[in-house]
Length: 297
Ligand code: G1P
Image (tube, rainbow, N blue to C red; front, side, top):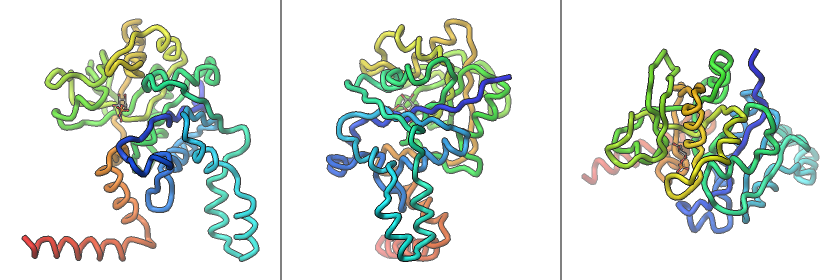
C-alpha cells in the first residue's frame, strides 16, 4: 500500500517584484483574487486532497501571511453579535488549526529547490506535496487530488504538466517524455528553463508536485542550475539518473499564471464570472467595453 500524502510545502518566499509597488508592503500571496487572497485557493486545494500539515517557506516581510491564517476572535464576535452568520462561516473556513501550519524562513533567495529543502526536517521520511500558489488551477476535481489518486498506482515522483506553446517552453521546467498513457506521462529527463530551441518537448512542469523524501537528499547533492539557483527540477531529475520513476500528470482544468499580471487578471475575471453573485453584472460590463472597443476601431 502506498503511503498517504499528508504534508504539503508552500514556497512563498519570493519577493513578488513583478507586482511592485503593491508587493512593497503586501505579500504577493495575500493579493486578492475576487475576495480571497491567492494563498487561500492553494490551501483549499491542498485540504481537498487530504493534506493535514501545511508548511510555509517564507522570507522577511511576509508576516501578513501569518496574520491571515490566525484566528480573528474580535471580528468573529462582532459578526456573531450582529447575526452575520454567513460571513462568520466564511471567516471560520479560513481558520487553520493550531499545529497544522508551520512557518520556516528561507534566509537566502537561493531558488525553489533550496526553499523546499528548508522544510526537510519537517518532512522527515514521508512523501510530500509541493504547491506553488502562483499556479492557480480551476478544476472540477482539484488538481492535487487528481494527482494523488493517480499516485496511488504509480508511486515515485509526480509533477503536474501542461502543453505550452513551444516558444514559451524556456520559461518552465520541461519534460523529456519516454511514453504516454492517458494523462500519465513517463518521464526520462527534465530540464529547467531550457535555452530557446533546445526544449525536449512542450510539456511544461506546473506548480504541483508529489515527491519522495529522497528528493530532499538529492537537493543537498545537486549543483546550482538554471539562473545560478538550486532547482527543484534538477533534484527530481536526479531520481531518473538513479533509475527511479518520475511521472508527469496531465491534469484536467484551467491553469492561470498568477505570477504574471495578465494571468492574475485573467484568473480574476474567470473566477468572478464563475460566481453567481457577480456573473451578470460583470459580464454585462465586459460586453459593454467590448462593444465600445469595437465601435472605436
Ligand atoms: C517554477 C519551476 C519550474 C516550473 C514553474 C511553474 O519556475 O522552477 O520548473 O515550470 O515554476 O510555474 P518559476 O516560475 O518559479 O520561475
